[in-house]
Amino acid sequence: MTGLRRLPRLLAVGLRTHVVYQSRSPLELTFAAVLPVVQATLAVYLFRAAGDPDRLIQASVGAGLMGMWSSVLFGSGGAVQNQRWLGTLEPLVIAPAPLAAVLLPVTLATAVVGTYAMGATLLWGVLLFGVPLHLAHPLAFLAAVPACVLALGLTGMLLAATFVLLRNANALANALDTPVWLLSGLLVPITVLPGWTRPVSWALPPTWGARAVQAAAGGGAVWPPLLAAIGSGLLYLAAAVVALQYVERRARAAATLALS
Image 1 (cartoon, rainbow, N blue to C red):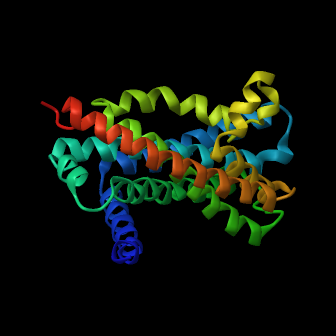
Image 2 (image 1 turned 90 degrees about the horizontal axis):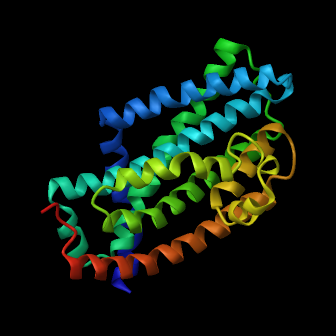
Image 3 (image 1 turned 30 degrees about the vertical axis):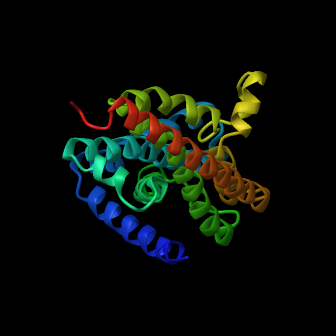
C-alpha cells in the first residue's frame, strides 16, 4: 500500500525531471523546433497540389502529430540510451521502484515535449500559408490532444521495453518512425493503404488518437476514437509491464545493461 501511495509522486517527479532534461537537450530541441515545421511545409504543399485546400488545417494537425510521434520514438530510445551512457541504467533497474514506473515518466515526457509540434505546425500554417485556424470542435480538440499524448506515451512505453535490451536503440527507432505514422494515419488516411494493413492500424493507439484529434479539427465523431485511444493505450501499458519483466530478466542474465 505504501508503494501504491508513492507511485503518483514518483510519476509526477519523474515527468517533471525528464521534461526539464529534454527541454535543455540541443538534440531534442532541434527535433522539436525544426522537424515539425519542415513536415508541415511539405504537408501543406502536398495538399494544395492535390487540389484539396479544405483540408489544410488537417494537414497542419497531421504534421504536428508526426512531430509528436518522432519525439516519443526518438526521445524514449534516447532517454534509455542516455541512462546507459551515464551509467545510471543499472541502478534504475535494481532500484526498489518497478522499472515500468521509472520508464513511464520518460515516455510521457517525450510526448509532452512533442506537443510543441502541434502548436508550432498550426502557427506556421496560419502565419506563412494563411491556413484558416477554424476548429470544428474547439473544446473537444483540447481533450483530444492530451488523449493522443497519453496514447503516444503508452506506445513508447512498450517500445522502451525493447530499448532496455538493445544496445543501439536508435537503430530500431529509425526503422519504426515512418511505418508507424503511415499505419496510424497521422497525415494520410489509412483507407489509402492496402487492406491487409488495417488490422495493424487498428491495433495501434496512435491511430485512434490521431482520429480523435483530426475529427476535432475537421469535423466528425471525437469521443469514440478518443476512448479507444485511451483503452488501447492502457492495454499497451499492461503489455509493457509484462514485457519489461521479461526484458529485465534477459538483460540481467546476458549482462547487456552496460556498454561493456
